[in-house]
Structure formats: structure tokens, C-alpha cells
Length: 121
Image (cartoon, rainbow, N blue to C red; front, side, top):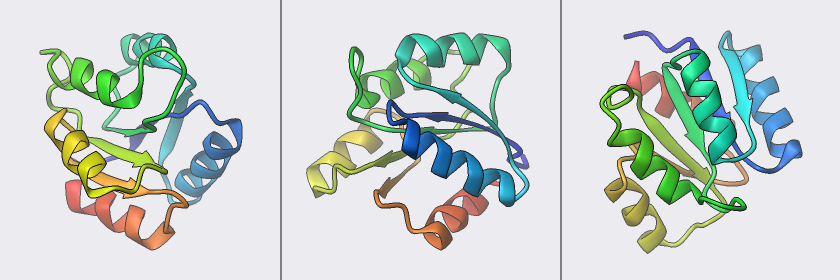
């Protein structure tokens, strides 16, 4: 499966703009969501090939949202990369346990993120 459509879930407009710009410059089509409700609305509109998920968000956090999406039969095949400022090993392990395929810490290292996306393709 080739990854073309990416859903970026983050409550920071700055981060959404940065990641959208970065991904579009590298040939990806990007949709964004600022919270869990928004994310589910976007998923219903069009199934992405990849989700980049922040952890710290109002309402449902990224760990909870990752668990909900990765356990939904409609989306079990959509890989999720946690993309967060939470840089403790326990956070990484917990994120992967919730169903994330990979984990990247902010500030995002561009080559690392692109390599992780390519590894999922």
C-alpha cells in the first residue's frame, strides 16, 4: 500500500500548518483535525492511508483516540504514528500498546518522520 492521504490530528494550529506544509511538499494529500470529534468526522468523509496523532489534546487524548481508531474494524488497517512532545519511554510504549505503529517526538525531525512514513508504505 502506498501512502498518499494523511490525516493529521493535533490541537495546535502551528503544528497542523507545519506538518501539512511538510507533507504536501513531499507529495502527500493532507486533511487535518483538531480533536477526536473532528478526527472521526474526517475519517467518515475519506479513509486516510496514514494518521499522524498528537497526544495532548482537549477532550479525548491521542492515546484514547488511537485505541478507538485502531480497534474499529473500518480502520484497523490504517497505520497511526504518534507525533507528540511526550518523550518518555513509557509514553512511547503506551502509545504502541494503544495501536500506534510508530512514535515520533516533537519537534519533528523531518527526515526521521519521512523515513518512518516510507517504512509503512
